[in-house]
Amino acid sequence: MDKQKLIKIHHALNCLTLFREITEDKAVQCYSRLISSMVQGDTPLSVDILADYHRLIGFLLEEAVNPQLPKLGTAWQNYLLNRILFNNNLYARKYVTEESINSTLKEAFLHDLKNLQLLCQEGLQVLEEPLNQTPGVFLATSDPLPDSPGAHPLSDLLMDMKQKLLVGTCWSDYLADFNNFYQTAGFGQLAIYWAFRWEPGSIGFHLAGIENPDPIRLKQLIGYERQRKQVLSNTERLLQGQKAHNLILYGDRGTGKSSTVKALLHKYGAMGLRLVQISRKNLSGLQSLSRLLINFPQKFIIFIDDLSFEESETDYKEFKTQLEGSLEQQPSNICIYVTSNQRNLIKEYFSDRHTKMVDGEVHTGDTQQEKLSLADRFGLKITFIAPDKEVFLEIVRQLAVQEKINLDQATLERLALQWVLWNNERSGRTARQFIDHIKDRYDDLDIF
Image 1 (spheres, rainbow, N blue to C red):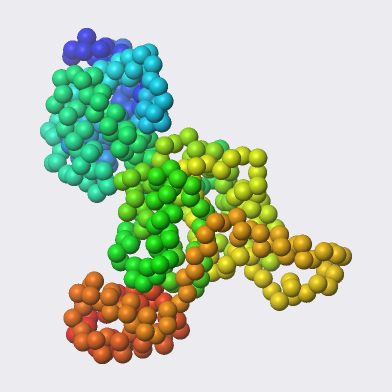
Image 2 (image 1 turned 90 degrees about the vertical axis):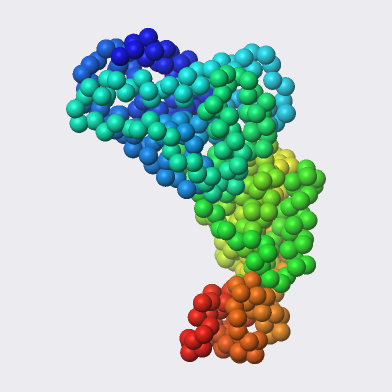
């Protein structure tokens, strides 16, 4: 056993400064305990240390079959490179926000790269000799994994960085490459994921990455071109750093309001757009979310789907204040996009318009104006109305072309209208459901 190399690896792991977060990773902690035990001369290895080793291998193998991230190098190298490239460190944060980086911060970054290079290239090899002498151990192969590009939107960039680092003899020579990576991909969770949920946890709200966001693309959405053009224009203004509006997309169900918002991610994600969905029940965390996101260089759409308030509820008052009216300035890198079946977000009844005294209230009109003022906090209100018969059939025809359904037009339309009778509505969603139903089955017309 090469004791000097073990000590060198042990020092490299414990001398990280900006990348210290890596040592808190579950797999790296197993590795750290294993290295520490060997440095102290604990051979034969204890049962607890052997358990740590096998937990480590389990984590590495789990990452090796992740279909999202590109795979390169050995299982250990692949795992560690992912943690390095996606690390949320001070240098990355300063660089992407175009703040000045002093010489000390730069030197700390280069110092960590030197230690991480040693861990990546030799970290698992030093374990082989003592483990070889221990019965019952599953020895992890040091053979490279089969190269795989993965499904991550930035897979090419990730693969390029991994290739450079695996063959590089001096990682500090790749400072410009790291800078380009941070500028293009970002850092931390915002580099790994493009879509998030804002969820409560044991110590407050947190961002939870969505590994497989809805794959819907704008080209799959038929009709409502004028409405989508407004949404696209506003989103592009956000991305360009110009003044952009909060939006309400309201109208009939199934008309593509939510799909329009979700499709923005695939069009603009590579340009720095991120989508954060927050549910109605978590609206109390909206301000804390804004305070968090303002610190990042990316542009964010906070997405609230299918929002409405009952007439008797008062939660809308807090939401209204959070939108506009608090002392805090509205962040320039954030817009809120809301979908709803109600234009004013609060259910309104004819009785609300009567001026009679209700529960002792004299100025009921003031209360009504307060409710209506919630929608006024949104600069654009975009309407999605259910299509008439001809527009609905045009949506069906275009979807059929997209899906390469070889069915004569008269039969296609007849079946589509029959489908509408069973679903009680004409909408883009109904058209999509119909097309999905007959796809690959249109030779058998007795499908209803």
